[in-house]
Length: 141
Image (cartoon, rainbow, N blue to C red; front, side, top):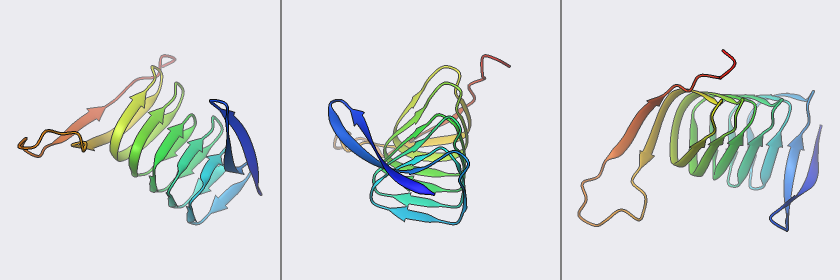
């Protein structure tokens, strides 16, 4: 059902708990390690590390994590302390509360994005949230 995979990233070894294509999980996941999803998960995910949704990955549920990288399909609200990265060909539907976002051309984002002031904001600045609705059409449609 799952396995531990080591992937080379910038000359360091990074471990992922992997849910392979063909795996279907219904239920919530909690963990402290990196997770890679190439199968289908229906349920909420709470992870203090990084989540990768592969090209064949389908996730339906709310996610709280440090970082998430999406190449497949994600439907649900996310709360990310670092980076939400949407690769070309990915689809995200939901509301995002994040620190940073990166969207490649060809990614689709239906929802809202709230980016609270970063810790580097100047003292005395009025607190604000940046709110944007984003729709990035897929080049193929």
